[in-house]
Length: 130
Length: 393
Image (tube, rainbow over all chains, first blue to last red; front, side):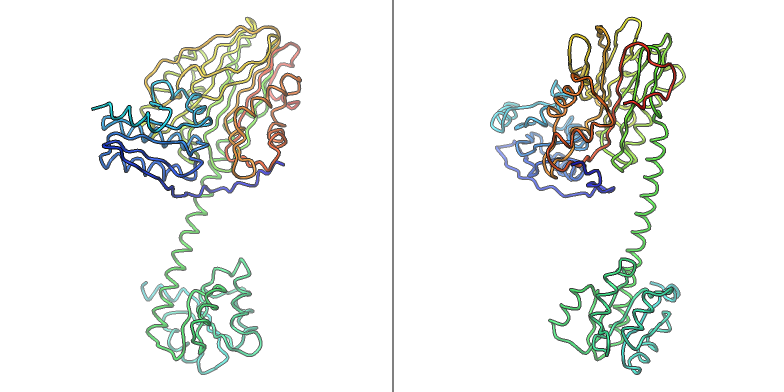
């Protein structure tokens, strides 16, 4: 059944919760949402930029709980990466099938974002910076 | 709030005691326009009449319709539900107060009267009312602006289809309700060649709409038709980087030049979802050839494809497959690809049926959260030359 009326004309902004862990000087951030989209992208971007501007230089973004990301979410991710430029290193890990497909279609998996299979490997790569 | 601005507000006093009405009226009439009612029926006539109040001071215990019922009826009507109601009553235990607030009153003042408190609370609630009205007016104005932008966007997309002797093109655009950043177009080139484009700007709203019109201007400026695709897309990428690239905005795009005489395509897929193509060799996806636009200084070389026999091509935006099924699952690219391949292989592909076909294949309630944009091109012979012939799709 097709229900085009299911969507409202306004996008409600929803705050996003994160879980963070540190391994030495490496910060691992895990968004506690299944979708990063127009509703929570600005909250996501706000959190990420705050972490980076607070001086976190080695950040792994764990997307293992995120099943879906739309263009607003991707835009927030790109903004985060741009904020990190010249400050430190942002890597992705735990990227699921849908998000992986998005990064592949947009070709951001080819040298733009550094992607690791899981948190352990991401932390290992960031620790190796020293 | 300045005293002279208060006269604008009308306060309705509802109390079965003439004396109470007199006291409150004397207290308030210097600052406000005061209306009064000695019972619930009259109060409702005033509220639902031509000159409703801005705020109501309402007694609870009255003969006939009591204050609670008056409050319930006012709150049940969308036209009057926003009027703040303050109960002023001798019923003073906390349960009464909680009940009064639960049915929609904004405040509860217990008798006996403390005039400074009554005046202060009325002032506070009128200020809140004014703030709410300002926010509603701003929201309405913003919605009007977005609707105007939405309309403008539709007007710059091509209307209907296009045909020449060798090619038949049909576009599809179904906006999600927000001004968005989807774009499709076709531009006839020399010698019956055709340039087609489908693009998607990140995000929604005024920002995406502005970027979308920027993309369109690149395809429509005077010499665009003679500029090779790769140069046009490189220029567009540079411009996007200079203007909006720092904010994280981006554009994905699939653009192609079709030469029906050579039966060949030259295309660039810059980070856009794969197009679906079928010729006599079978079905295939036309995968991205480069990164999305607005992020990196890069080259955007065009790829070439020699077609075999008659062919059909479908370019689209991700709104078709990034739709929600039963509110929480995404339909997904792979399911959408299978659906389109199946329709194309049956020879029965029709863009306008796609949203319903997605809904059928999803076996659930499908909510499209993004704009749906598509461009379908068919090659062959015997198409009628001229615009506006695409109704059959």
